[in-house]
Length: 367
Image 1 (spheres, rainbow, N blue to C red):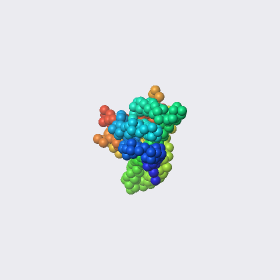
Image 2: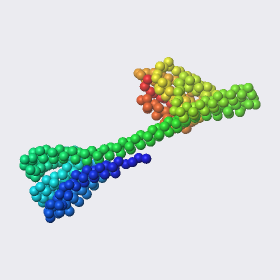
Image 3: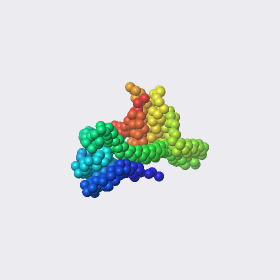
Image 4: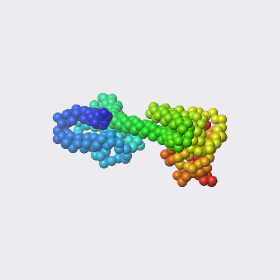
């Protein structure tokens, strides 16, 4: 269960702000007379309401901007009482600017906030110099400036910490959702690319065995045995996809493709360069062979298909070309999966019709 840090931040800021003003309010109420009561009655609401609104806005993600009406009201409620209060009671009200600085830092952009900080520091020093006992005026001014910085930046830090905490929590949730989505896409892609080819082979061998069962029972039994083998391989692939582990080899996949094409009545020609490539590149090319051959069997009327690889200028190129493409010549989902794998390695995929009515699938990846 995720607990929002906002209530805690509001509680801490309220505790700091109200707690810092309790003693001044008591002293002014008891000894300030009519001017003191007027300051408390008018000044406190005009000071604390905008202050808490600024804190809530910052917690909700409002971006700092220029001076606002609420901030102007809070500034007036901070400094006008000094003109009303007399003697030592002005000293007690010097705690208000320390809280005002928190609102200034939260609501103003850095250039405005810096200017306000300089002005407030000068004003705080002057006020303490005026209202303190002259013997200790310098010490009081220094202490008050330190208190101004400490209280204002603590309020700012508490609010920003709560905002950053929520942002980090949301970022973790987004990353978790993205990881789940990537895993779903991986499973979908691998099942499509892997099982599509295996099930196509099962269908072809089953159909061939059915045609041979009467004319050539021995050949039919051979095809059925190979069908069982392919089905077991498909089951193994499902388990590998579920575990997130797939290891494919270009050479093995080309061998498998040749067998599948010949079983489909398609003559296959291979021209493979002697490549020494990293495992991810080899697997990406193997997936391309599997997807390309599945498309040839499913979506073409090909009689000849060629598989070739070459290397040039640090790039490996795989081409699958067939001589007869139907109108729908490729599986869009499969090509999307191939592009994802190739782009992940810094490569590219192209699929196009050839001049003689055929179809070419080309994959290029850096070696």
